[in-house]
Image 1 (cartoon, rainbow, N blue to C red):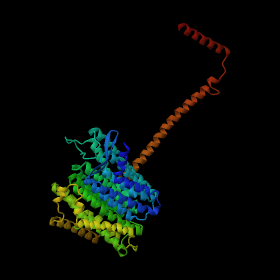
Image 2 (cartoon, rainbow, N blue to C red; image 1 turned 180 degrees about the horizontal axis):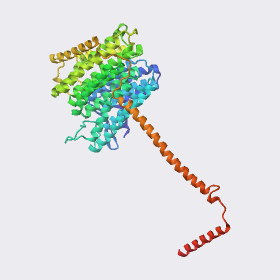
Image 3 (cartoon, helix red, strand yellow; image 1 turned 90 degrees about the vertical axis):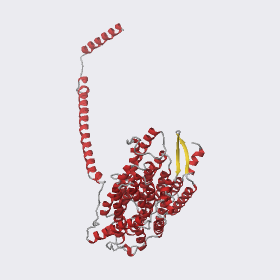
Image 4 (cartoon, rainbow, N blue to C red; image 1 turned 45 degrees about the vertical axis):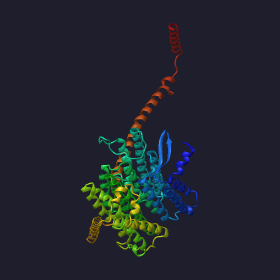
Length: 577
């Protein structure tokens, strides 16, 4: 690699600017860290703006051409929203003095940004692993044994995804001779599943939190710090969504995987007492809509909804984080009645709740409709019905439960102050985007990859509005009735298990059995080995010991006889030679 190519590799990549800013935070005084983070994010955004659509940072490695920056409509959309999210996180956590968190606050988004800009699979793998390593610092940040163990489990899952990705890269290169990060497809021309593609599919699926591979989200995100949970909620799963949209658009299996993802988190979220865990289940549900859209080939819906979800789900995490910052808890049983002293945070939270529920006039409405229409256009009635049911479920667990149990419900007796200025500004910007892009979505639609398709889409038709309002109003009525007749799941202090049951109950029992069996096997083998050694040593002692055969006195004649025998043997050998 020439010096000019090496410099171009860094100069043309906005993610590198973020990495430099993150590293600077480890050296500068703590009170300057927030300024450095925001300046680095601004410079990276300016660099992104100056780059036109195309490929940059092309280098040759071992004879293979790598493209470190590929800017096309889809990668540009993710790059834009990642910069917005990074800036909002920095403002929200303004003045934070934890060096490790400050580093991860920018290094983690940098890795996600580098991944969506990657034009080849090697570059993707590098940033993929970088995202895993930098994000785990946010899980470890509280510094407790619980968060340490949770972070180790999180890291193990992320590393597994990286190992599968690397294996998929090697197998893909062996099959195709190409490292380009583009359409892969799960099946070949004959309809058979390609093994290399299946490995890549699983790598992306783990990071997307496919069903039964999802519990790392609940395990890790809810144990992070207040600001850490907000940052974690944004980047990992969205990088995976982008990767699926790039490599597996129109894959039918994703339709059904996504549909299941939209349904099962609803039931766990309804019985969960920790409201941060409720929002992590909401991540599973929301990513399910995106995955389903990718399977349908509705890429505009998938990436548009990813953009919107980063904003309005981030707003919900911020609002709940503010309540937790002021009260020290995120448990529904310990919150309630906060509307009296936190009215602004309550109002901003409700805007996020309306948006995630796709109320007309919000960002969620103008993006989710693209997915629902995609299912209807594909004539998949049951999938369409599933997505409608899941949309109602979103209102129940995220649109109603989060603001209701945080700010209303029973009176917890807590009377905290409203949000600090930095938190208020970040939430205010997110709320303005939720309403502004909901009322006037054209700036967002202009970023979508399929401009021909979006040109014919109109979100504010009578059919779309009436359909969504009917759905939401019935869901609100159902919630009200269930609460009045006391059928709504009671909020009780408890720990609920879902797929983690497999490793916490039978998994732990199995490990205990394996440990016991291994110990017993080792003891038995050691007993046999030590017994043999003792027997051998006893035999040696019996021969060479002080009373053994080799230690006794021998007659002179006996020794003379053996000397004669040896001499005769030597003469015979010399004669034969």
